[in-house]
Amino acid sequence: MGPMTIPGLVLLCVGLLLLTTGCTDRGPRDASAAVQDGIMASTETDPVPHDGDAADDPAIWVHPKDPGRSVILGTDKKGGLALYDLAGRQLQYLPAGDFDNVDLRTGFRLGGRLVTIVTAGNRRDNTIAIYRLDEASRRLVEVAARELHPGVETYGSCMYHSRRTGRLYYLVTSKTGDVEQWELYERAAGVDGRRVRSFRLGSQTEGCVADDELGSLFLSEERQGIWRYDAEPDARGPGMLVDGTHGAGHLSADVEGLTIAHVAPGSGFLIASSQGDSSFRVYRRATPNDYLGAFRIRPGGEVDGAEHTDGIDVTTTGLGAGFADGVFVAQDGRNRGRNQNFKLVPWSRIARALPGPARALARAGSSQPNR
Image 1: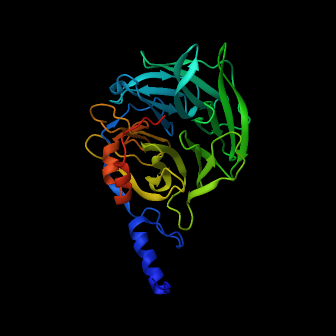
Image 2: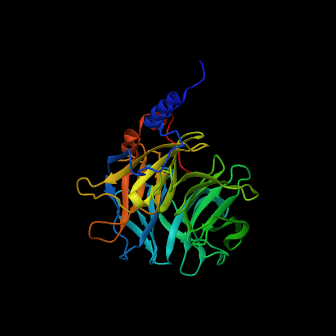
Image 3: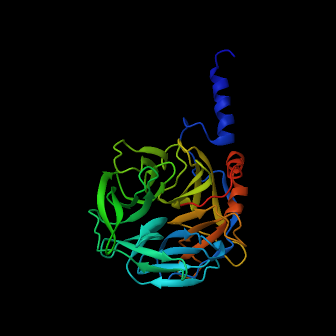
C-alpha cells in the first residue's frame, strides 16, 4: 500500500474512533459520550446507619463452599463496617471506626490454617483495621496484633497478594497524594505489619486496586486520572497514566473507586467510578489498559440507580440464583430519600451491554475468583 495521505489518515482515525475510541490525538470532548445507560441493579443493601455522605466502599467475599452464602462488605465512614448477604440484608455491623475503604484476600496463614483477611483504613485514629472473616458464621473477628499507624493520613486503601513472593500487602493513600505499602505477616498475637515502600502522586488520591496475577497497582488521583504502578515493594519506576480527566481523557472528576473483573488468566477489565458524570469507565485489564466503553446504573423497578459513586467491587464468579455470572457492587451517593447504600448489579447485564470488542472479551473465558 502506498503512503497514507492526510485525508486518508483523518478518515482512518475517525473510523477507529467510532469503533474503539482508540485514536488518542484528539481535542477535548464530552467525557459522558457513548455511555450505556440501560443497566439496572437487581438488589440493594440495607442503608448504612449514618446519614449524609457515609457509605463509601464495598468488597465481595465469595463463600468457598456455598457461593450463594457470599457476603458484601460495605464501609460506613461515619462509624463502622457492615456485612450483607446477597439479598442486601445486614448480617453484622461493627461500630469500630470511620472506615473509608475495605478490601480482602483469601489464603493468609494464621494460627496454623488459611483464612480470609479483611483490612480497612480507620480515619478516626489513623490505624489499619485487620479482621478475619469467619466462614461458618459469616462474621468478622479482629486479629490485629497491635495498632498499626501509617505515616500518612489515611484516606483510601487496598490489598495486594504477590504471586512472586507469596507475601501480603496493605496499601494506604492520602489527601496529599502520598502512598505507603505495608507488608502484613503473622506473629503470635495476630497479624502485624511493617512499612516497606513509600511514593507520591501529585494530589489527593483515594481509590486503589491491585492485580495480583499481573502485579499491577492502579490508583485514582481524583482530579487527574488513573495511574498504573508496579505493585511489588521493591519497584522504583514511575507510574503510567492510564486515562485522565482533561483533554482527550474519558474520566470526569472526581475519579473514585477502582476494581478488576477477571474473565480468564491475564484478561478481563479494569473498571473505574467516574464520579463527576455518575458513570463507570471500562478498560482492558492487561497493559496498556485500552479504554473500551462506559455504563451507568439507572433506576428500575423498586431499586433506584447509582449516582455520584465512591467505591466499587466486582466478581465474575457465579454466586447462585440472581448472580449466576457474578455481581458488580457500587456505592450509591443519592439513595432516594434514605441513607446511602450499595447497589448489586448482575455482571451478565453489564457484559451484554458493553461495546462489541469488550463484549467479546467478557465472553472469552470462564469465571474466576477475583482474589
